[in-house]
Length: 362
Image (cartoon, rainbow, N blue to C red):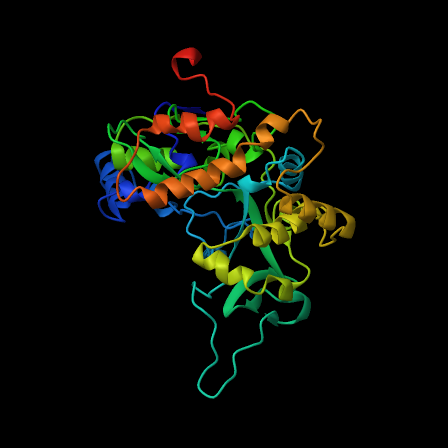
């Protein structure tokens, strides 16, 4: 497998606003396939979100939709969640919930004369419950427990990917340097396994990659070689439970949180509830450690977590303040877009690791 990442970072941001029409990339991909004499098989497997529940990717599973609108959410493992907490980087993390199968993103409601189920009430049959009603939404569940990923937040940043001369405000991974379009934690112990394996796992599962979508929408060669080895660490189906797919044991505790997740208005306390469950999970089981839950939740809610003598103290100081600064600048921009170099003040000056630039990698 070989990829050309310079000037791209399509897997690290939501670049859909750059398209003139929502279906622009799909149409371009169809035209490209026709011109190359392809049979359309690649297009049939172009799905934006991989279903985390089924090992075979069955058609029924594909109907589960996330509550949020993140086009390329990066799921972290339990151990990675714990590592970010230990580094004082809880502000970088956020949960993703899904609507239950066939809920199709609609609020649950009773039929005429029928009361809507109480918040936290399961849909299904006992241990096989696949949906729970919370805040009027039927969210996906395992054994009656709402399930979720934990991944990285995307604050708005001024970026100019794909050879564009003018920057645009786009939801961008907290760790992406807008000036170089390189990851600030690449090569470090906290670089997510999912990022390191990208796009190999997508290719192994016959799912579309951001590399291909960028090629279709903007041209150029991004996925230069698609041959790949059998990837490790996919964690699909039951293997994912407690390791990457987390199950909240108390659905009622998510009241209000699910609604804010659907609206993109999660608070620090909301994120703390989900992140703590993830950190307290046990791979392969539904078990939750109360000790780890309380410890993780307290750490997320602290302004700065961990021992003051930690070697991560420098990094601990920049993530949360940088996210809040980006959000403030975006709200105050009034339609104007600053140079990506403003990241020097927002991130680097606060202690964010610098990136080498592409010339240094040649």
